[in-house]
Length: 237
Image 1 (tube, rainbow, N blue to C red):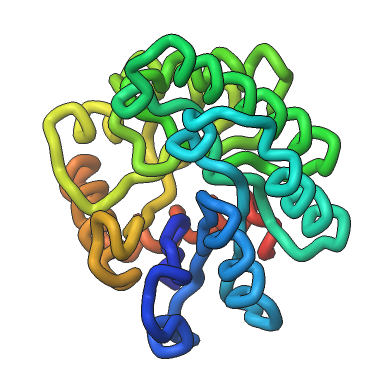
Image 2: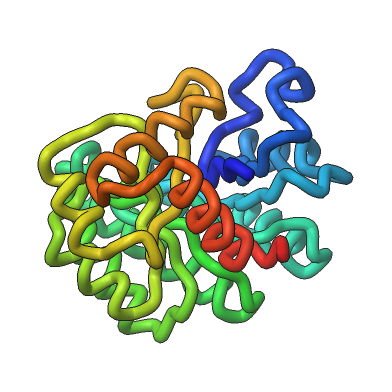
């Protein structure tokens, strides 16, 4: 079964019409408002996992985000979420040193929350994937997924050596093909990032095609293995 490991169901006007019983999903928060909506969307749906957190694009604005992180903590304690995310570092947008420091502070707080809650972490990293991975290693994180990975193959190799997953989104690049060949199917999942990159979760099939082409294997093999990887990660087995 096709598993879209990262989408934003709250961004659709009618999420109920988007979700199909023939697919699995993880819907991801990034702001407090999105977190609240995604917890509600996933409620009672066996085929929809949910991760919530404060994304770096929010964290860069500054502040402690006490209320927002408390909401994540409360839902973790209630067993209503399957991962903490998307969290991380994004220096594409955070150009000023103080913005980057704001991101690092909130990233660290949420890593610690994930460890205390015994939940995996979904990473948003851009122009700084190496620093994201080093922070995870420093804190001793065992389960992480690098969503919409656009980094180099050396950082990807480091990530999978730590047991982390690389998530492939539906746009092709030469660097992405190198990453896929370097890490292999064992450490890959697929995503749409809909409606941001893919327009709908079914566009995850484009990610499947990219992997199948890079590795010279069937789409069915990619779907089966990436689904198994995502189900293990989100404890949906």
